[in-house]
Length: 223
Image (cartoon, rainbow, N blue to C red; front, side, top):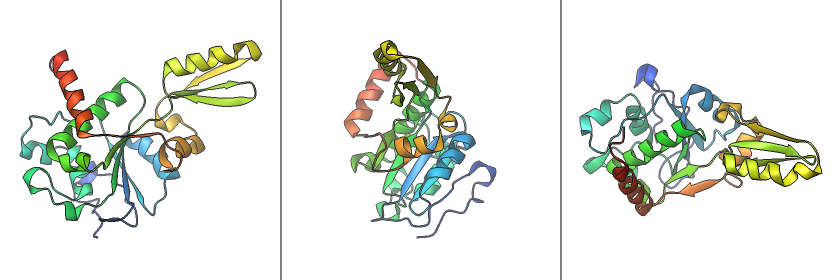
């Protein structure tokens, strides 16, 4: 299958593609926040089947946006082009370039917000990707606790605190909170977020996204 030309979207597109893609392959597309995160993931990914696309800033809330607005958006345009299927009624499953779409956001409030907006996009414009189990969220570690001669990682601040409390009576305890994906050591990033055998991944179902949207609607307008 033809690879996406990075020039098509000019400066907006920073897709670092993989060598093998298409229907029936194990190709994966990581969608990450910003150039620094993308560079870190590119260093540890398998270029044979793992592609990386950075998105700058927060995506558009596309639930009620027009097709034209979504297609022309500087964040969604390159994503749509990379996936290759088109969107909405024009979706073509036989043109899908990746077997999995992996949302790998920073483990902070902004990252959660970006992840939710991306899930809304897939729910509204490419629901078949979710229905077929091709969209997943990667959970990066929030930080690490060095204690008792070992390093232990947690997925939230509460987990880090609980780990630190567990080891305090055995000697010195050091807590390190990561400041985005770019701050995670390469080996840790590979093992916890990128390598299929060891990363922490949650696949997203249509019911998951519907429940999320219902919850957000109850909170009021969502930007």
